[in-house]
Image (cartoon, rainbow, N blue to C red; front, side, top):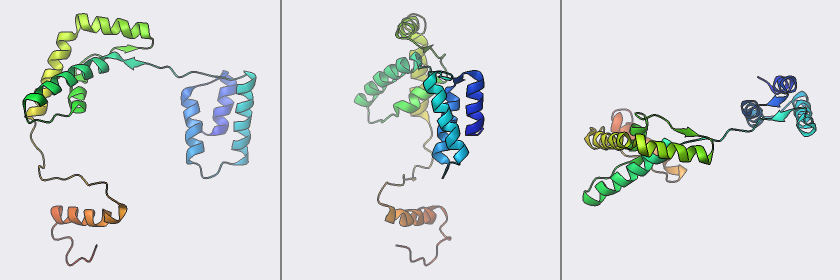
Amino acid sequence: MGINSIVEQALRDGFLTPSMEAEVGKICDTAAELSVDEYMALDKLMGFLLTGEVVAMPRKQFINVMEELVLSEAITRVAEIEQTSDSSLDVGDIAAYALNRLPPLYATTEEGASYQRQRARQELQNLIQKQVAEAIARYLDRPEFFPERQAISNKNDSKVASQLSSLLKDYAPSYEQNSNLP
C-alpha cells in the first residue's frame, strides 16, 4: 500500500492505525526519494491530523505477566545451580522453553497486571516451577552440538576475510589451496 492510498483510507475512515503509521514510516525510511505526490499526501495527512479530521489511534501497551514470573523463577533456580556447580546456564533459553509450555497472562493496566500476578501465584505457581525445572533439566541434558565451533569475534572489519578463511579451512579443507589472504 502506498502513501497516497494510506492517506485516502485514513481520511475515509477518520483514523490512522498504528499499522498504517508504521507502513508510512517504512516507505519513508526505505525510499531513496519520495515523489512530489507522496510529499503532498504526507502534507495532507499532517493537515488532517492537526485539524482532527483524522485521529491517530494510540498503540495499545500490554505486558505478558507470565514472562516476568518465569524469568524470576528461572533466575533464582539458575543462580542456585551456578553457585553449587561449574555449569553455566542460559536464562533466556530456559525461560523460552518454559514460556512455550505455559499460558500467557496479558494485561493492559497496572491493576490488570496485579490481578494476573496474584492469580498466577495462587493457581499457577506450581506449574511455573515445574516448567522451569523441566527447562533446566532439558538444558543440562542437551547434547553438545559441534563442540569445536567458535563464534566469529567482533574484531575490526579487516580481519573478516581471515575469519572466513579460517571457517572455510575448518569446514571445507580442500576449498582454499595456496591462498594469499591476510
